[in-house]
Image 1: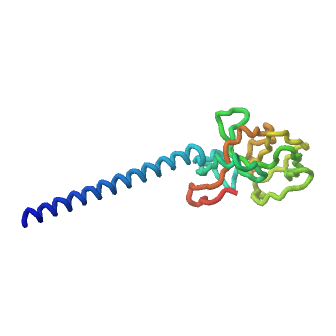
Image 2 (image 1 turned 90 degrees about the horizontal axis):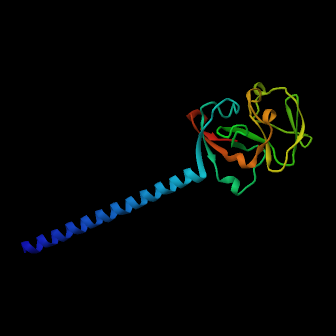
Image 3 (image 1 turned 180 degrees about the vertical axis):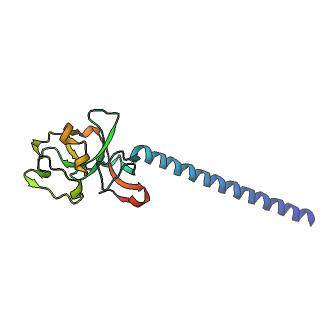
Length: 189
């Protein structure tokens, strides 16, 4: 009887060991799979970026941290109003963040700080009065494959008014979420 009970206890111990081993392997597999998916997303879809400069205030301030969707423009067109991150046309080792104001084929004109697209004054609710400037820019037509960008803090922005259009190939993503500092957490619009 003692041997039979010892045998049953031994079998029970082996079953418990087997269940624990199986459970650990299952958890390890799931964790590795989750890490692989996270790495794929960070490399190909979403990229964290640090904002440098004040050209997108008040929505984005210097040193804010944002996520950029690097994949979205494979499925949809770049639209007016999108906040994009791109390689600076004059020095491709630097990246800039600005708002798309004009798309290919649009005419853009700025009269005393007011922006006209195709002859119509555009509504810019994101632009605060204290960040406006009163510069003018003669009408330009945006060529195919290029975009006209401006910062929201117009009087401190280095943008298309100074160096021209941004080629589509230089735009690498759309800013969509601010995650740091906590006071700025939210969608980038």
